Image (cartoon, rainbow, N blue to C red; front, side):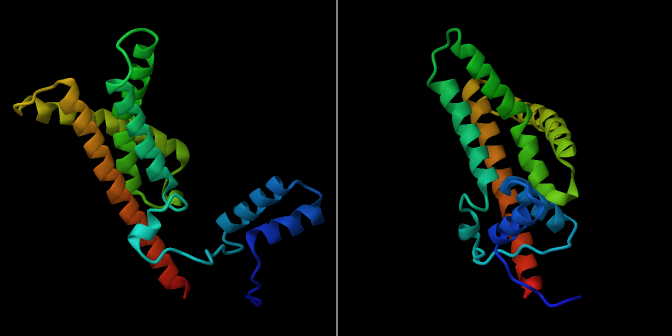
Length: 184
């Protein structure tokens, strides 16, 4: 190995864009491809050292999008009127919250590294696991005093998804912290 040269990603992409006559976006894509092939290593100059720091939108944008999707579902269920065309919005957000998000959060918890699964595998497993988790929640709710009604279902889907999302973000943080220690 040769001597390590430190450049910012933007400087590297700019030099590639200038040398190869491509746009900055194409050059940035080439930098990302080289990083994925481990030809270059991209290092965060100011990484978070604590879990609350890792929860910032810079590192955990996926978690905040998950929270926003759940908040949208709850808002559409409780704030929108039960009349067309609002029923369509309620149905779409409800389907997303019940048939994708719980499985997505579980997949993120089980496979915290992006390279462990392809994107299509993540989507397929998210749907499959949601199709397994949601009926199990219904089964459990059926044997509680609250039963299977709107409020308990909305609360249980939201709670389970948030708990799985927080577990996933913590696992991602631990992996991130481990890679930082190994890089030193």
